[in-house]
Amino acid sequence: MGLFEDDFYSPKVSRQRKEHTKVKSAAGNWSKVRRPGMSTLQISVISSVISALLAVVLFSLITGLPSSTPEAAAVSAVPLKMETDPYERLIQAAAKVRPAVVSISNYQDLNSDIIDLDESGLGSGVIFKEENGLAYIITNNHVISEADELEVTTVDGDQISATLVGTDIVSDIAVLSINGDKIDTVAKIGNSKEIRLGETVIALGNPLGLGDTLTSGIVSHTKRDIPVSLNKDGIYDWEQEVIQTDAAINEGNSGGALVNLDGELIGINTMKISDMGVEGIGFAIPTDSVMRIVDELMLTGTITRPYIGVYTVDLNNRFTPFDAEERKNLKLPSSVEDGIIVLDAVGPALVAGLKLNDVITKLDSEPISSTLELRKFLYDQRKVGDVLEVTFYRDGELKVVKLTLEDKPVE
Image (tube, rainbow, N blue to C red):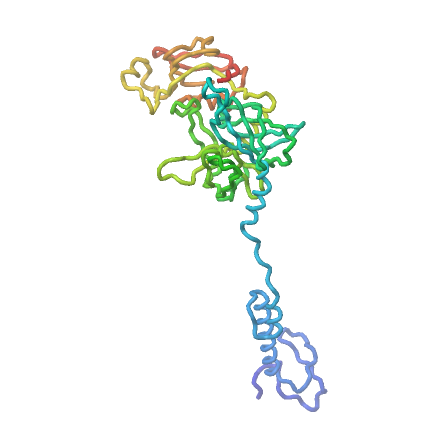
């Protein structure tokens, strides 16, 4: 008896059979003719050795590890392609946008007895457009505020006098123009809505007067609302939507570029949180917000916003809260907990009859609890010329008036 007890194999070949014998496979098909003299055991051993050699060669080819076989050694001797330098994209992005970032000097006449202007502030800007011999620059309003003269310094060291095209205190955006003869690079505007949390970004600008400076970091938050005080009185009366980043942003970086790894402008650096124990919290205004303002500034030099004409204080002002006696003097129903108190009325509000100590609670049936909410409602949902319904309390009596919104005067 042979090694295998089945119907498909026999180690002996009868002399009465033909020299070549056909063997039926396990699948029931007839296999190729097997030559006599080689047993199945021998075939299995040879096949196993060949399979092992092939496995070693394939493993060496895939992993790049050395092999004891000459064939595999020859394959592993081929040098593997090295990974791209992980910082190469940073280098390329910086090179692409760097010539479009400028330093801005704000000169002011601080002493009327001296003709020379003093350099009262330093900031940054980004060249975003070149047209009809002029180059246009985006920066922050606070960079150019109260300037008697503005000067731009390019990365090549050229100093060029700048002209203010338009500015907006609410968005903190301004546009300048300069002679474009020596300008050959403008920044490509990216889509700030596509940024991702953790994405690598680069900040370029003029921190502490050290022009042509670059820092890098990540997007720490894609959309954050930061309270700001428009008139610098310490009371927050607006919220700025910003990109948060841990790329170093310091004094003088304001107005500079925040770019992605494609070298596209995705934000205008505008502020940082500076306090004991605080590190790596900087903010940039996203380009989607910036360019809406820039387009209007380029056309008219100003931003048209609807204006109600009231100077107010919040009923729930956390800085100077109203005590029980003051609330009593307003004669408000106990159910009224939020609203804004009119301190002065001008323009449309004065025409409509609003006056001191009126407490506004609704605009067009929309509850209003703070001056910030009033501004957001007007700026985001209404336009100049709209008729607005104002609900308010006067001496405890509920009243409603209508007024026509006007263009907000330049402050």
